[in-house]
Image (cartoon, rainbow, N blue to C red):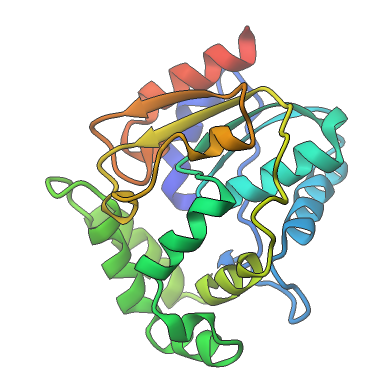
Amino acid sequence: MIEHYADLIALLSPHLRVICFEMPGFGHSLPQSTYGHSLNEGAGVIVGVLDALGIQRATLAFSCVNGYYALRVSQISPDRISQLVLSQTSSLRAIHPWARRNIPWPVLVPVAGQIGMWLFRHKVARDWYHVALPRNTSVNFYAKTALDALDHGGCFCLAGVAQGLAGEPVDTLNAITATCTILWGTRDHSHKHTDPASLLECASNAELIRFEDCGHFPDLEQPRRYAEILFGKVCN
């Protein structure tokens, strides 16, 4: 949710122009019925935001599956990307076994998955933070912020995203040439079997920085450290 990023935005905004937006299917950014969460559609959303705001070039600081849409923008509109800073984004090849381990198979079934996710959205959101965060981290802030949004019309289209990315060939995002930094929280239990360096398969010049004390959200769990890294990348 955008609300999760308030502290990070406060750290960055005195130094940078910060644009924070939700991809369709998250928070209050409800997707159109025809939106399929494909790589090209997601990339089109990002380019559309840049166009609407008159931004010619930007650093894309995205996390998790949204990192794939940022990578796709770097392929189809390389002139718009200064660099990529991606948190907890593995390769597409690695995300498929991750999905099999962490996403119940009915979620991948069109229509049934969407219905199930809507019915159990509160439970899924609560359970997710327990899996994604280190055991000694309180989930209260993360869960309450998400549940408040869901209670006021927000959405969590996990089924749509999972189904959309499941149809993408694993080699679609190969040969990434954009300057890329990968931030990886090593205490993310959902990714305990994922190689943090898997994205280097398709972005061989990327830099990998491990956050040994973080789970799935290094940008939220350690916003000051994240802001220092991002600020250093943008200003160098």
